[in-house]
Image 1 (cartoon, rainbow, N blue to C red):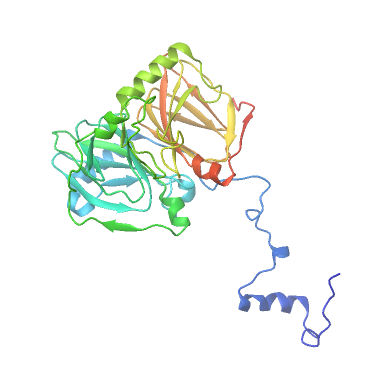
Image 2 (cartoon, rainbow, N blue to C red):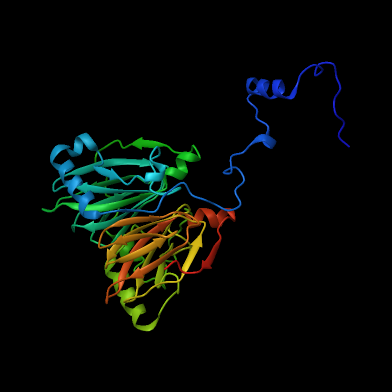
Amino acid sequence: MIQTSTDSTTSGIDVEQYYAGLDSFSVEPLWRNTDPRLLPTEPKSRALPHVWRYDDVRAQLMTAGQLISAEEAERRVLMLINPGLAKRVETANNLYAGIQLVLPGEIAPMHKHAAAAFRFVIEGSGAYTAVDGERAHMHPGDIVLTPSWAWHDHGNFTDEPVVWMDGLDLPLINKLEANFFVDGPDRVQEELRSADSTERLYANSRLNPAWQTWDKPYSPVINYPWSQTEQLLKTALDDWSGSPTDGVIFEFTNPNSGGSIMPTMGAYIQALPARMHTEAHQHTSSAIYHVVRGRGQTIVDGQVLDWSEHDTFTVPGWSVHEHINTENEPAILFSHTDIPVLKALGFYQERTCQRQA
């Protein structure tokens, strides 16, 4: 049984004096806390559903290309800032996205950081990303990985601008206060392997090179080419209807482990068959979508997000959402999420809901 102290040191102090004096000790009584965010009955993200129109972002990016040199910018990127998280560099909780431009003849110099990243190519062919001594040539629809602590640089020796979406786990790593950044010793790293060698080595997903040892927590593949992804989607659409909540959906995986491409981020490609209206569902993970092809809507907690080709939109964690393909052709969406982190910690939950429309 807990005894109430009657020591003389507390005599003569009323409760309000007691509370007023707690600040000097940097403590606060839990029983007086009224902030519902401390122990919510269910998650409620501060992030808001939002669409970034590609035509608008691209126009601003091209203007930046005229005004800001590659040397001045190092990375010419327009960050996609969620309106609900405007004081933070976040597109969704734990996730970041930005749209990057590399003009003909430009080099984005080598560096590395603790944050993991990928590039989803939107337009332009033939530029490269070099990762730990291997160049991966980039084409629209490719997803190119630059994992945690991997040296990487970009170059465009073609005659056309190249634009891609950067996806990073920066918000998560910075919240954990675990981020580091290191500039490279040179602008361009030495080529240690022939270009696109890992793409060729792991081209057959059923066969892994048995002589290769790989003990890193991310995929050994640098580039997941659109040519293979697109063919897989076409074949699957002929045979399968897919998930009632996501259509025909595939996860990009680590060929060694079968798990996510990176320990902090998952990446997905999905096709919504013509006129599909998915079932509504919610999950504790956040998602950032990029529209590869098509036109449609996503309803998020009752808010209708209209999207078309190359737009980017976000679905906050635990929001009820459903996708609608408004066209007579399949719509294709690429997305990245923080599912791997939530599953690793045992916090991932998902459930189906009633449609909102």
